[in-house]
Amino acid sequence: MHPEAEIRRRTFLTATLAVLLGPAVRPVWGACPVTATNPEGPFYVPGAPFRNRLAPPELPGKRLQISGRVLGADGCNPLAGAVLDVWHADSEGHYFGLEAPRPLAPEEYLLRGRIRTGADGRYAFDTILPGNYRMGRNWARARHIHLIVSHPPGRRLTTQLYFAGDPLNKTDPLVKSSLVIPLRETGEGLAGTFDITLP
Ligand code: FE
Figure 1 (cartoon, rainbow, N blue to C red):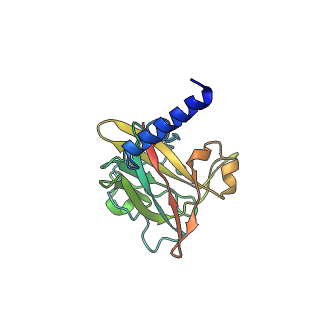
Figure 2 (figure 1 turned 180 degrees about the vertical axis):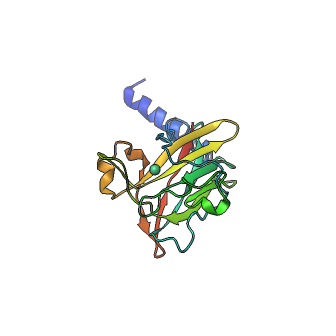
Figure 3 (figure 1 turned 90 degrees about the horizontal axis):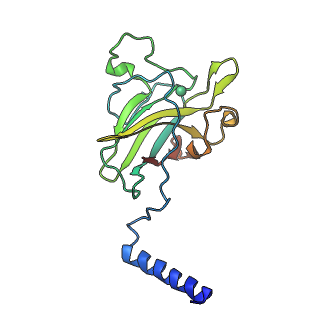
């Protein structure tokens, strides 16, 4: 077959396939790369309560809402019942609940919480914008939120989420560009979207 005719035939077949599959079915090939991982770090406390408000109203800081979907890499399908275990520092870079005796009481899990995705794989939580903190003399952390995202029976991914515009994104060696999201002003604070694809 002439090369141009072959290209036209392939284009036609691809278009036909797209029509047959419909817009609801997203392509499997490479469209949902697994979310990049990042270390858990030393400040995780297991057992946080299930809730989608991580910061009490009196806690100082810029209000922040993060929302998105949890997807499976095998077909980009939304994962219902996935659990996001989320924790982060306050606006001054301090973590709560580190010194208190264990187990922590629910009110001691400040800026920590677990969120379950709905039937459509969506999640949302409200909190405050985390501050920067130092890990050593030569290492300052960019603003970040820690997440362990799991879906039964065995999918699990540990990562950190970063925010565009933080100057420390350029120098914190843990920052990966695919984990940096833009934030928008909503009138009530900042909001950002982060879709997570599990392996
Ligand atoms: Fe941290």
